[in-house]
Every structure is written in C-alpha cells, then in structure tokens.
Length: 87
Image (cartoon, rainbow, N blue to C red; front, side, top):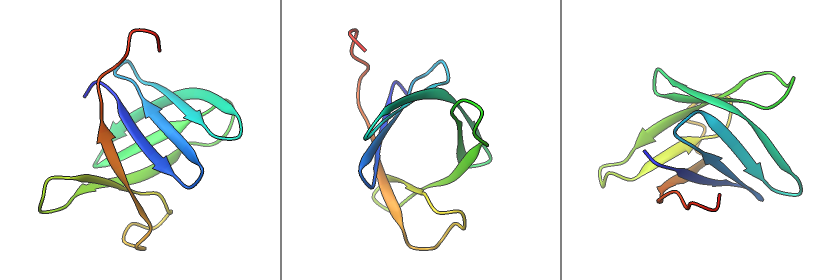
C-alpha cells in the first residue's frame, strides 16, 4: 500500500510505507506504525502504543475499529490513495 487515509472523528491519520505515521487534527503529530495480526498499531512520542483491528466487508472495502474492543460498532473506512511527492 502506498498511503492510507483514515478519518476518525475530527482527525485524519496517514500511514506511509516506511512506517511513518502522521495525524492531522487540532495539531499535527508524527510517529511510527506497525501492522501485525490484522491490526495497525501506532505510537507517537512517549505515548503508549494504540492498536486498531482492520477488516474488510463483502465489497472489499477496508475498515478500522478504532475502539479498544473490536466489534463495538464504531468503525471508519480506510481509503487507499497515491503518495504525493510534496508530502
């Protein structure tokens, strides 16, 4: 995947191929992410790591369950878009 854009609440999260993670909201933060066991795990600065379950529907769309317990019903769609050189 080149680039993933997930909108959760009032913030957008971006995942780059080399493991860089960027969050845009009221402020901009950068950190790292890893993918493991069907989950995306993010970490920014000294904050503890957060992991989110990733799944797809029958149409092939991808979603992330952004609450601690998968299946709580609160999900956001994951969109794949090309990386722009200026980013």
